[in-house]
Length: 76
Image 1 (cartoon, rainbow, N blue to C red):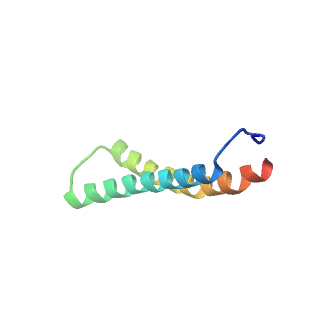
Image 2: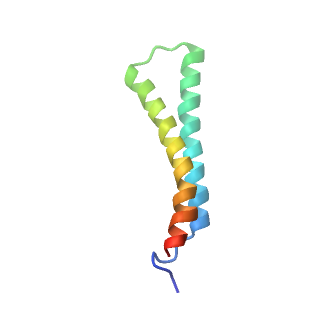
């Protein structure tokens, strides 16, 4: 029998959400570092996109364990 939200694997969602956040942060940080190291001139929107990836990665990485690991299992 499923719970209120059906049969949700909270542990799997927590791990995958955290890994998604880490991957987004790594892509943004390594992209920014690579552009700086090579010295390429890129438009400002590309640098802003990499910065946004870093921020999204941090937010997803921090909120995913709280939402899927703590909040949703408690409300079930």
